[in-house]
Image (cartoon, rainbow, N blue to C red; front, top):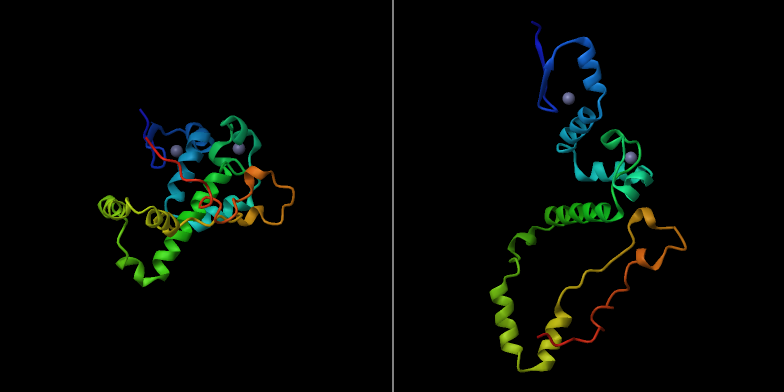
Length: 171
Ligand SMILES: [Zn+2]
Ligand SMILES: [Zn+2]
């Protein structure tokens, strides 16, 4: 009757034998749990910088599977995930750097409906609302800069392209 070894990272208990422990610590599940555990305490900026410094794991990104998982030396993040992370980091920075951010109300459906109702009979005003909408400005993520011959699907849409689209009537 031996002692049990409890692994905090994996929330797992097993018989405390040198062999068991060695196998567990080398195991992929353990390494994944361990990485996930530490990742939650790291700044997104640090994680992103690390991911950007790695080359993409072709195997994982094409099939969704990689036998190395958390311990893979290649990046398992898609471009979208990296961009999303960058957006989150930027959003955080913006909140931190501007004190006025707190006073800006979040957009509410009621206010929007009110605005639309007021203007619904006046086409030019409706158009104006559409133009006033803050449109996101897309730019190339830093790690894609300098790469020529990018396929069109990876290029950011030119600014203002959405405002020039015809407005379709719904319903
Ligand atoms: Zn473990
Ligand atoms: Zn991989």
